[in-house]
Structure formats: C-alpha cells, structure tokens
Image (cartoon, rainbow, N blue to C red; front, side, top):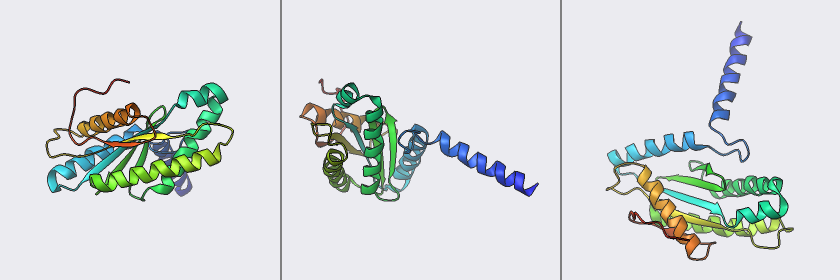
Length: 191
C-alpha cells in the first residue's frame, strides 16, 4: 500500500511539472509565468518590492527554420534557454511565452539592474550561439525589451505591454539590442 501511494505521488508530481514546463526548451510555460506575475504584482502593490521583466526573442528566427529546418531551429531554441539559465539568478523565472519569444521575471530587481542583466544576456547569447552553430553563417542574435512594475499599473498585464513595446522598439531600431519602456504607450511601433 505504501509503495502504491509513493508511486502515485511521484506520478502526480511529474504530471504537474509537465503541465508547467515547455517540453522543447524545458523552461516554464505560461501557467507558472502568469502565477508568478500575479503574485509579484500583489506583493508590489502591498510592499512596493520592485519586479522587472525582460521579453526577448530570436532575431530572424524564421530564416534559421527555412534554411536548416525546424530540427535545427528547435536546437537553437533549446540551446538559447540553456545559455540564458546560466546567466540568470536562481530566483529568476525564464518562461517560453510563445514561438521564439521568452520572458524573464526578475523579482526584487529595479529597472537599472534589469537593463544590465538584459545587456549581459544579449552579449552572452550572441557569443555562445555563434559558437554552437557555426554552420549558420550569420550571427544569431536576440532583441530584448525591459520594463518594471509602476505604481500606476492597474494590473500585471501592463508590465507585459510595456515590455512588448520595448521589444518592438529594439527590433525597429535594428535588432540585437536592449530597449526599455518606462511608461505605457498605446501605439506599438510599426515594423
């Protein structure tokens, strides 16, 4: 009887982990991401503890898939996440937001430190991905948008909107760069 309960608990744990993890990259999916953002937002409203967010994606990822196939594209995404994990702190959350877009939640981190970390990620990813995939004759880069919770935010989604605006500013400004969005803008730059 004890063995059956142990096996059942292990299966429940594995099922929960599978429901919260992206199978390709082995990083968190949207469920734990949104749970953490909601929790951090509530904490921010109550105690004013800063939380920043980095939204990033691979530049020209479609070209990698088109030229070398989706298998190599998948390898690039998995390697990207491995590289990012090495750059992040233990309490930071890396999550796949969709496709080749990823989010890093930085608890207890103000904008200045978040920008510094984003720039370091950009540099490390550029160096490491080019080394890991020499057959791709172009640099594999990422563009990053950074934002932090503001007192005026009515909900945590405002943080995501500002990071999205900053990401598109980085892409519009030439890619392979970090941009910040300090206030909410309703118009996203046109590419």
